[in-house]
Amino acid sequence: MKNANRLLFLCVFLSFVVKSIIILFFIHAPAKFEVHAIAHNMISGGEMKYNLNGQDNFNYQFPVYPFLLFCVYKVFGEGNFSALFMNLVFSSATALFAFSVFKWFLLQFDLKLKVISTERIALLSVVALLLHPLLIYYSIYIIHPFSLDLLFVFATLYFMIKYFDKQTKINLFIYALCLGFAVLNRTTLTTLLLPFLLFHSENFAFKKKMKAAAFVLFIVTVPASLWLVRNYTIYKQFSLNSSMGQNLWIGALEETEGSANLSNGKSYYAALSEKELTGIMDLSPPQQSTFFSDKYFQLLRQDPARVVKMFFVKLKNFWWFRTGIGKEYPDNVASYIPLYKIVYGLVFFLSLTGIFFIGKKTFSFVSFPLALSLMQAVFYVETRHRAIVEPLLICLAITACFLLFRKFFPLKEKTNGN
Image (tube, rainbow, N blue to C red; front, top):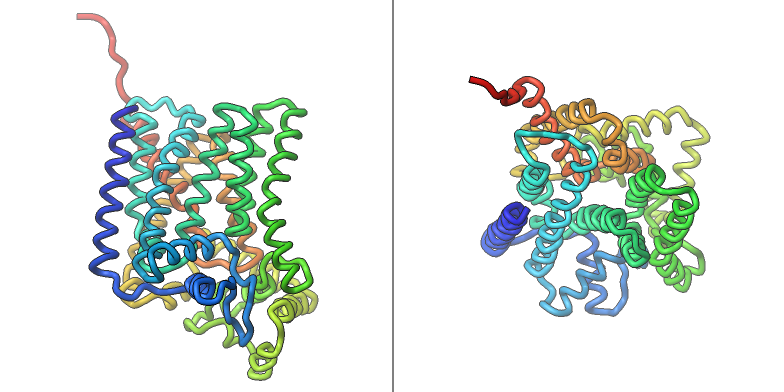
């Protein structure tokens, strides 16, 4: 166990050093998303806002990542390097949490493997996480909330298993609070509640289940409620996010294949008429959200079959790839997509193999990826939405490799005799 921990910290440390060198010497102009503009506006004017469609939008993005980015800019100065190093810290912390998460779930699987220990499978999974090219791209090549999303996934699962290992109120509170901020950072991470409820329902008495679930749900709503109140003071209406209507509408467009871009690489704005493009510039952010929501529900009323069809298109795209993938990436990144498809296809096949061999014990483990895919498919789907669960698939795939080895090359039992 001590050796596994030493190897874990060595892998994370080496990864941090190598990626730091890459940031310092090879990344000169990382892509900046709206979170950078929001943090900049907080530095310059003290307001968490983003200019979109001709209006200052005060709740286009959820606040956790922009606020942390603002803090980093305030302390270290507003620059590319400080933002990317923050992402690198997040990805390193993710690896540390992931080791414990992988190991705990592998112990629940009760694999009884003789060729390798659960610690080593967990360590191999962490190494794969640290070397995953898409995770690296989103952590050190662009200023984007993805690295924090991934950290929240594994931090929430980590504090969940800490509670299951030692069922105290403080452990339950820490898990619930972490989940609350995860949800505030990305609403679809409410799906992290599912493995908690499933495992809790299988192992605890009914009264304890209900009390724990009620407590968790209450704590989870606190951060989001504070954000709702803040938004109400600005717009005089309750709203978590002003892009929800927009996300519903673009996900129902056949031209986008349920993503944020058309198949030719153009933005979803190309699906609007000139009159609509001009008109939304005169609307407030809540009115703009209503405009897109109205377009979505109009489509739902007129052609519900199309909306249902697009849901399954997005579900397929979550677990596989859309036709126009890569056109929004730089050419040097897009050139590696065929290789990524091959490797991901192998991982996906092996993860299904692992589920087949292990059986129903994997249900709580895969419940989060499955629920996330279903919830994300309601809105819009891009490859990064699946990338957040790929470390879990990789852990299952690595486990499947050793299960297949045991099946085809069983170890012979030692026998006494001459």
